[in-house]
Image (cartoon, rainbow, N blue to C red):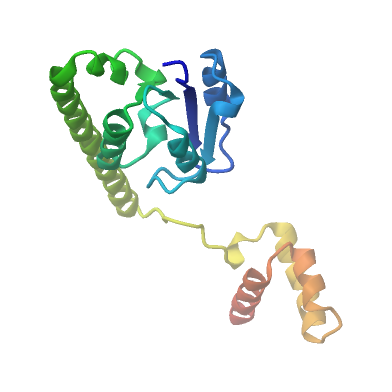
Length: 212
């Protein structure tokens, strides 16, 4: 087909992540940059602006390169459904660069009906392995939290209190507390001297008053 296009799809989970590595791989494959679609979004679903734009461009015989399967999506049941939509409904092909030997839909297409059967089995196995891996991760996280709690470790943000002040901050608090109470020093200036935010400042002051 003379109008067959080659596309690249890139996804990073957040604005802080760098897409350069994936982009270099696509360019190395000779894909024109205008045919590379990139989202900076979660892979929880397919409601991504650039992915949907790519989907609208795909035609029969086209080829889509993706760096890794989890760049397509995080829910493997959804990934399998999307894979089948692209390869069977749209009749395009997908190549996953992370493992081109296994993840190349053209290999299954060349085998006809037997290829579809093998592809279904392959994708089902993939979903099972991915689901088991997710369960292992959740189990390790739960075990880690349990161990941390047993050791008395605080989980979440560290609590900031009067004892958290360094010597310089405590000295500044002692020297300026009365001046502040007499309204000869503004609360804003006192906070600046201590290097504290409003909520933390008033929490520290209350604790200081209680101990005094």
